[in-house]
Image 1 (tube, helix red, strand yellow):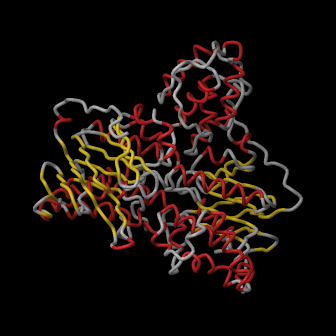
Image 2: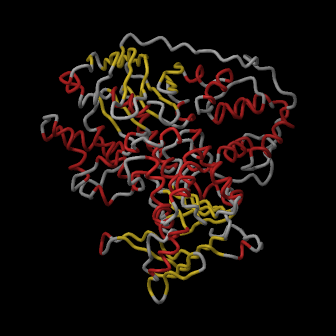
Image 3: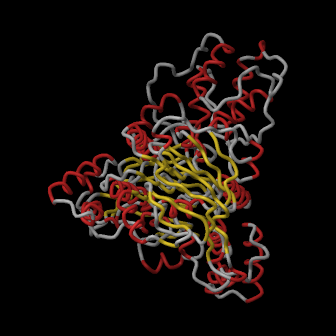
Length: 609
């Protein structure tokens, strides 16, 4: 349904196009391996517009970003950038592309593709230096942009020793230091914590108010609500286009495209389906006002005094899979900051654990220590009864503890999917029949049956990640440790991976995962909160995510699950952690006023958290 009834505003700026694509087609590869990344795309971006591009993995979003930035020329069609045709019937205008790149900034999805120096402030200065600016002006811009992304304290740090989220903020600072007229951001929040994503959204708000044209590519559908216009891509085509409200009203279409509606839209839809007379909307304020009229006076709350309390950890099971005891760790080649400081907690055999914390709080370091890749400087870690203090002991745990890195697709190396997945089991000395049995089972778990002979590098980004995870699962570890496994995945990919992890956990495997999603963390059995290298709190989700701890979590750069935020806003006495529980709480509070579902309710695809 291209267009979705959208009409661009007839302002003077809207009549000026900073980027225009007409019938653009771009292909990768050739012959049977040819991939059509963009297929007859026509799109115009107005000066000062804030455009959001959504789409499943492999839909063509990143390729579109590269064309808009002048990094890629298409095979067919016409491209104009900043008022100059740079590709058309006469081929490529090299000078036009060069001039456009000076005024169009790009923030890549992966900061490793953008960071080029070994000192943060030098990396941010790289772009302005190439523009030929005076040293004093470069210094002003570097200081300003590092402060804008809250990285001023890391100006002399080595980017390679920073967390993924911190690296992303450095990359964003580098793009902003060039003061671009157009800024294209490709999944800028994929590696960031709650505070980091909010910070980047505030930066985009400010730039937009200052007249900078923003093209924002994201999988976080809530972020699209701030856009003037939303474009949805699928297999290289523009499938939907319109205002956020217009696009998200097509819930069934979004579901078939591997996307979802924002939480507020799903909540209003579910409440309507349950018979509550509320409007369908993406707007938090509109729904909150309607529910306030329905709910009447706010209910009395337990713990309404707002005094935070420290939740107690649940009683450990008789068997302990992981014991972290007063662990501290410092990266000695940096400025001496502690990555972890006196951290202690147990993990029960077969438990599901979520670790949350702002970027740089020590989460990834803790993952590496649990996986016995390194030993702590102080304290000790015991995994499956084995102390990780010695190299010999750590070697015993390899294969028993599976580690899925933040970018697991970088672990791929073999010529075929089957060769890649079988590498670990083969090195364990298993018989060929057992290796094949494990590989078949792992590929079935991740949905890659039939891809055994394919090259892992020809898979989509989401499939590459699942292939790498299959290689870990084929070793059948007792404990599975995952560092932000869903980062960069579209909603369909995230849902698929959650089902896989649920199935693995149901079979008795201990799951320990880092996540930046409070909704995901709320589904675990145990939540650990790291803040500034220390363990701030731990316990069951209902103990950690509660009204009394809201301020403490906020101060740590975190938040509450969406369902609990809504319950607090509506003044409900219950503290739900999921969509279903929130809907039940609302319906319970409004039971006397429930009427028949309003006519005209939209038949949209509703998915709980």
